[in-house]
Image (cartoon, rainbow, N blue to C red; front, side, top):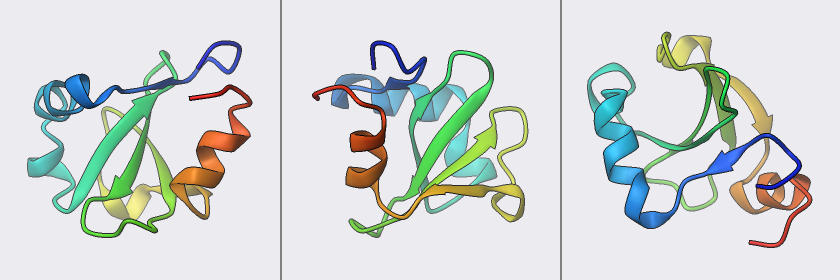
Length: 84
């Protein structure tokens, strides 16, 4: 998203990014949906359309270490301040 420093992955990029960071191995049940370009990733629960958005260092995809950054994906997108 322009101006926020956050990249929200397109549907074409989600699979590749999740494979690259081995999300299924290190954080089963989560989906990597974006990053800040500086090593921080943003994830949602893959099986919950109303999932909160979590942040985590991309080198530490341990769900116990995730921090909630927004109560929902739509709210998180809106907080980035750019139309999607």
